[in-house]
Image 1 (cartoon, rainbow, N blue to C red):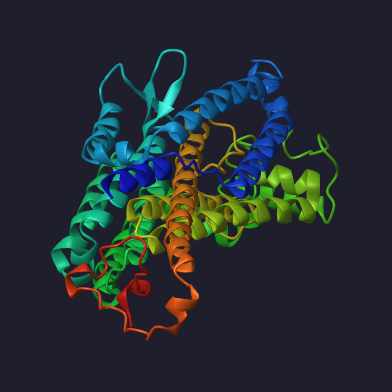
Image 2 (spheres, rainbow, N blue to C red; image 1 turned 135 degrees about the horizontal axis):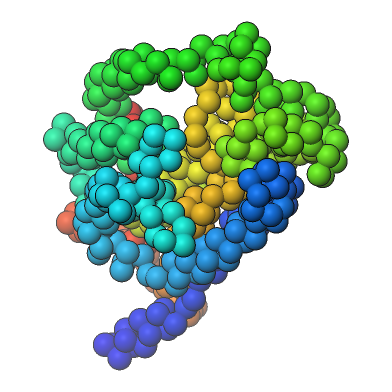
Length: 437
C-alpha cells in the first residue's frame, strides 16, 4: 500500500501546470502599446532635451527587456520560496525608503527625494516597495486569516505597517504612492475577510487625515482647485490638465493617427510618462482609449479571478498575492487614466506597462511574473486534484459487478469531525466579503 501511495505521489509531482494565456495576452498587448506610444511621444521630448529623438524609446526597450528577464525569474520561482522570505521583504521595504535620504545614494528631483542613484540610472524605491509589501501582506493574511476576521489586534497590525510606510513616504514626499499603498492595504484586508464594521473605524479616522494633508500643502490644494476648472488658469496651475484635455478633445472618435499629436510637441508636459494616455487619446481617439481600458480591465479582472480560484482551493498566499497585484495595477491605472481625462486631480503616477520609466517597468514586469507563477501553480493543483479524483473513481467503477449490485447498500461512513476543513480536495466555504453574512 505504501508503494502504491509513493507511486501516486510521484505521478502527482510529475504533473506540470500552464501559465494563464489571458494574462500573457493582456500584458503583452499593453507592453506593445507602451513601446509604440513611448516611441511616438518621446521623439519631441528627446529632441527638446538634446538627447536624441529615439533616446526614450531605446531606454524603454532596454528596461522592458530587463523587466521581462526579471519576470521570467519570478515565473520560475516557487511561491513557497517567496513566502518564506516575507519577513525579510518587509524589512527591505523600510530600508529602500530610508536609503533615499543617505547623501550620495539618494537623489533629489524637483524637490522630492524618491530615487536611489545607481550610477548608470536612478531607481524609484517605492516601485519595489509596492511589490514587496504586497507579498508580505499576503503572507500575513494567510498566517492570521482567522484572527484578522475576529480580532482588532490582527487587523490593526498591517494597518500600522501601512501607516509607517505612509509616514516614511510623506517625508520624501510622495502623496500619490503613499495613498495607493493605503488603498491596497484596505482592499486586501477586505478581500481577506476582515469584519467590515470593524474596518469602518480606521477608514473614518484616515480620510480626515488625508484631507488635512492635502489642505496643509498649498501645492496639493492648488492641484485640487485647478482640477475643478483647469481653463481658469491655463498657463499656470491648470497648464498640464488643460493641454491634456485639448489633446483628448482633438482625438475625437478615431484620432489623428500615430505620430500626429500636436500636444506632445512641447505643449503637454511629461507626454511620455504621466500624460501618455492623453497622447493615446489624441492619436487614436475614443476607440484607442477604450481598447487600452479594455486591456487593463481584462488583466485586472483575470488576476482577481485567479485569486478567487486560489482561495477556493485553500491556496491563500497565492490568492492574496493575485488580489494585491490586481489592486495595485487596477488602482494605479485608474488614477493615471482619470488624471489624463480630467476626472481626477493631477498625481505623479505612471500608466503601468505603457508609460516610460525604468523603475515602474521593471517592477510591473516582476509583478506580472509573480502573477503568472500563481496561475501556473493553480493550474497544476487543479490537474493534481483531477488526477486524484479519477484515480479514486476507477476502483469504485471496477467494484460495480453483478454481485456487488445485488448487495444491500450501506450508509457512507461519517468523516471525523476533526478532519473538517483540513483536506485540500474537500470544498471549503470561505467567509463572505468583509466577513458579513
